[in-house]
Length: 508
Image (cartoon, rainbow, N blue to C red):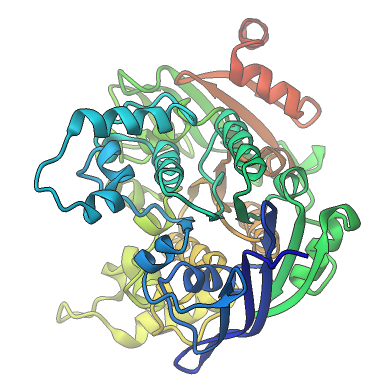
């Protein structure tokens, strides 16, 4: 048999006293798509960063084509034909799409002059394989889903033999994801080997040839996809049976609670128009729709992060004057951003500082100084209640896994005792075990009397978690689906416009 294109043997990585990887093995055959699965914190991204030259192993061996190699830098990895598409966006926002895509090649140029016409022509040819994005635009002007496509396109410009994709569809629409899958299959047919990291089992079982599972920084097993089921993989990931991914929904007798939030005819004159809905005590209201439909903008408009030109927001019947986000927080409305690392948490600050940041006024003493003991007590309380796995509340948030970072982001919102929480993609990029914990937490919060609105692009989550679903299309509510009406087909029909007229007639 031919040598594997990549062999990892006995790789260990320590960050001080923390053991991120312990004696792990991994092989990648030529022309295969190999899934790497595990909970957040299992060591997947650490290993990929070692392969890509971002991190150096504490011990162990890496072989490429059977030959031992050192990979001291990302440039060295690229020279070996290894490309990595990070889960987190790593682009230069003030540069154009074309400049970002060919940045590595530009850095290797010796000529002081740049042929921008050729650069943009070559970049557009690659980008057109994924989406119709103008490569002359600045990255900062693109939504997150388009930035993710730029990251992928950037990797496609490299002459890769090994391509690592870390949660590549987390921010993509279904159409964009299908385009990516087609490209992955073409790359495989051309002999490119792909490591595919994802928490979405449907993608793994559709695309991949083999699957390797890591748990707690250790290698667990490798199987052919044809020999296992999604449940097998999940059990090996978490080391236990996940019996119920979604908690029990409201029973019909419980669905008649008082109205907490009323949104009446709000609009911003551009991205959303005449949006009205209500939220009852004890329920979780889902908001679905295609990426770019205006879901996030509606949430931002409610809580003062986007100016409104029309409409009103009421809490328990009282109109709220919300001109800025601080007004929303004072009123009891908080927002959890879809961009966890960009807007949800402060990565370099401690867990305690993150949890307390919205509640500094109540933690300040008479002399105007922050009461450190009160801050620590608040953080310890919420970290315990949300079961944040950490070394201590003084640890920086960047030291946590994605699921635990999300728990800190939620704790930050809960610290101000909100009446309503708007959550945008609350489990994006989080493993199945952490998802289950967050789903359970959201239901507990709803039953405690907090109003919960969840925006999600993940259809199973939207249908499994929400008691009702509003579907947004082109900045308007296309329709509402009750418990008995919810299905993937019903959501897609409304989101795509196939059922708009029917929804309007029903609403009337």
